[in-house]
Image (cartoon, helix red, strand yellow):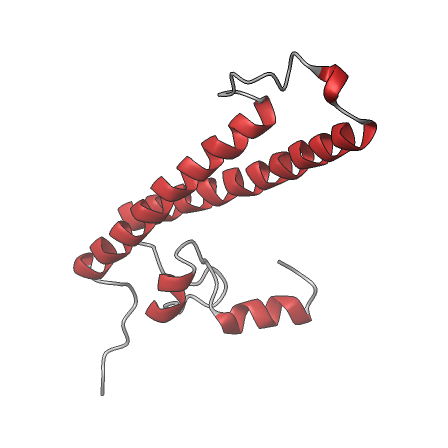
Length: 132
């Protein structure tokens, strides 16, 4: 009878660490860019000092853009937190174990969604029960 695997090996965890660290670096760079847009940093043009050339529509579009950037920055920050939590699970060797079923999350899923804490099966069960 085959032994049921209860966790990923150290070598497999190292592979996932590389994937997550790469995603984390990109996510942090994107977050910083979005934050700069929201904070209006990094520009030395006349945009701030020349309101007489703006129309009401331009002002509204600019505000909407900042609001969208703010929303995107918040989502990116949450993504960064999830990736950092995944690195913590790698450290304590619980990475890739479904928090509902206790089964290993398939490698294919973890490569696409490295911060996943649920198998697709568990997500479906929770969705049917109206929980997350």
